[in-house]
Image (cartoon, one colour):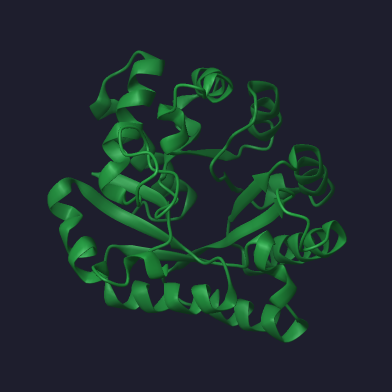
Length: 256
């Protein structure tokens, strides 16, 4: 079964058909979903989805674009959510320099504090890094993030950066962007990254693969991603599905 390692089904883009869509995943070969918190409210909603659906697990954290909402009390609230039996990671956390706000110092502070939260609660991290390659890596190295473990979500950098994360034993979340014709750098990186370090993801409702680029994404589109990886790796579609499921279960402690 396909393991969806990164979706946002708490997003209001799914308000009209969330129950119907999630109920349909199993018949389309989607066995497990990690729903990802991007804010305090999103992290709370993620826990509720975990309680409602047996196949949904959660990550709680605050996305770099939302960290202006964080306070000491907010961090303590996240710590409490981490104790839920179906919360398997802290995320998504990191740096995003695409927009001028929140400021770089604010983003760095809360990235570092959420990394240390993950260390404290002994959960892996889900890393968001957009237009912030060097700063993300520098912070992770300073904080010995290899000891924490995790995945670089929506990996979009070149294979030289992939090498640095491989040295930390990190996984790589690969989604719809791999199907884009202009994703040459990412395709080269995926060819370089060992299969035992790759996870399938969508970032639903964002980043739909070809041929649905521009539309709302969902886990139903994961076969397009798996087929592209299979072609790049010269292996079967089934092998990609089996290997990425095994990788995700190992990372998130769901092997039993």
